[in-house]
Image (cartoon, rainbow, N blue to C red; front, side, top):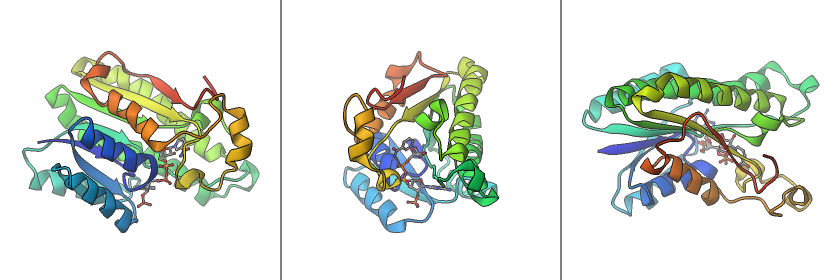
Length: 243
Ligand SMILES: NC(=O)c1ccc[n+]([C@@H]2O[C@H](COP(=O)([O-])OP(=O)(O)OC[C@H]3O[C@@H](n4cnc5c(N)ncnc54)[C@H](OP(=O)(O)O)[C@@H]3O)[C@@H](O)[C@H]2O)c1
């Protein structure tokens, strides 16, 4: 049985990615989330209605003990399952000018994106290398490429994951495991709900925020066989805002 593991799959981009990887790529889904049980349950219901499995794995991606214990327990219970796709999507922001950024806001943002990438990727990589097949997709951001004022912590976290994507891709390409990053601009989700879209869209050539489903379409392609000669890439999806 083939699974795709999506972190932060309960809401926003992760939710759309779970639904798309089930519908288009026919993967059973391992849906990780942090705290929103009802949102995760809604996605699970929708996927299971289509006849595929969707299992909920509740853990903080930055907590090594929680990631290790949950993944080990799941693997023990599902010895025949293969995790072919990992989407490191969980992320958070704690915005503010750097001069006012306290240690907690720095640590939380860095740990969720960067330690989350480390912990969760470590938990599935060995099997991918043994099977000689895998797709790892890291959700980064325009902020990690261009830098964004008020988001020094978030820009640093996403920039680090971009560098890790490129380095890991070179380490493991021989084993047919690809690693790519997707860098969205402004996409409708809870994370951008407070943003002033009418002002910001003036900066965007396509003149609108993107939809989570549009990001999910790109992830679905990268998660498929069709992307077999793409690795170590960072793919922008931002309506032309930055390239
Ligand atoms: N929206 C955008 O415009 C945009 C642009 C560029 C990049 N991104 C990136 O895209 C990804 C998804 O963003 P989004 O807009 O969909 O965010 P969102 O609506 O805030 O959803 C965040 C998701 O991540 C989960 N999550 C947060 N911290 C976690 C942790 N420590 N452990 C496990 N799960 C955690 C949340 O789980 P709960 O539901 O349990 O809280 C939720 O499912 C993030 O990496 C973000 O940085 C978004």
